[in-house]
Length: 242
Ligand code: URA
Image (cartoon, rainbow, N blue to C red; front, side, top):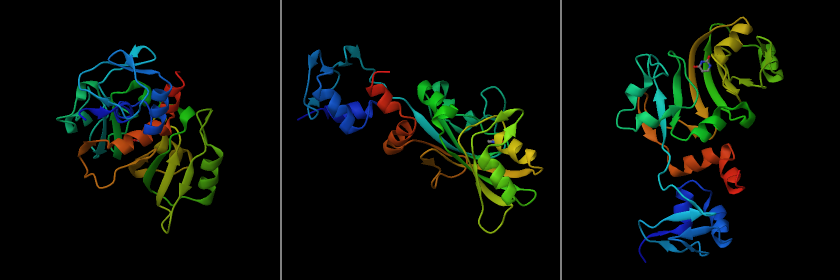
């Protein structure tokens, strides 16, 4: 039969996993061309309207683009050289960065057209982990590790607990944060009397750079997209009708 399976199509539109959307369909909450359809395996002909709880579903998908940012680019539309110059061929007009990386910071920078996703990824409530590789002027200490774990106080604000680790060389460390304040990594080490010489973001929640070359960008794969929405519980909230 022609067309796309209803459960697959709804999952692709971002309404949940295949299992979650199948539940919506079985509950009779989805209409195809005005008719309630309760079979998740129903093949949806192209071009017909879809509704969830009587509200039309936008068939346009959001875009999410992963950039391996090199040093020397500014996370800004107006200042240059801009990271947007590295996104040629992507729908840059609607893509907003999920947090910022400083001009001299390298690594994973995500862009999305989904404002709610952006909000959740950057809000401390969701505690999305960001992992950084940090080269330091002086060796990190066990006391630094303790202070970060307890939650450093910066300008009167207590930070969320952060994990500092290293293998052999305590000037080459990894730091995991669950929030993203302005120049946070640099300010944390500065508060400990140290200085960041090199900074790279290695991951954001479930996303890593993999083998994406520096200076290049790509769309998220669907399993990455799904993992990202799950990390901020966007699927479950949508399903509860929030
Ligand atoms: N913390 C910083 O200090 N700079 C960055 O670019 C990212 C996190």
